Image 1 (cartoon, one colour):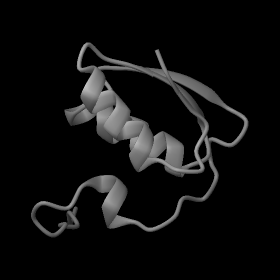
Image 2 (cartoon, one colour):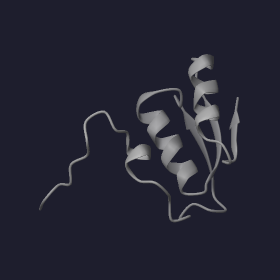
Image 3 (cartoon, one colour):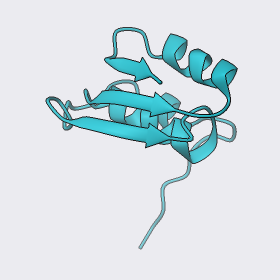
Image 4 (cartoon, helix red, strand yellow):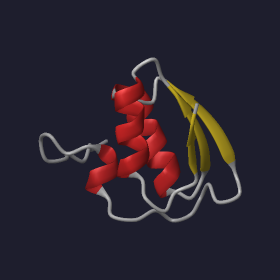
Amino acid sequence: MRLRSRARGVGMAESTSGGLGRLRGKSAVVTGAAKGIGRATAELFAREGGRLVVTDVDREGLEGLVEALPGSEVEAV
């Protein structure tokens, strides 16, 4: 089995330009979405066309996430 590597410092959402719409019509709630795995998950789901409700105790980080996903259906609570 061979693993593909990514450039250092490039997130999963940044390494691929567009999604295939695999989550179009689906909804997800992502907790801890301001950074780390939660943010990467939210970015991936948004790229794939999913509707998101995101939450985190880091309000500024959450606002940054919403701003980084223009054109996506993202609601921060």
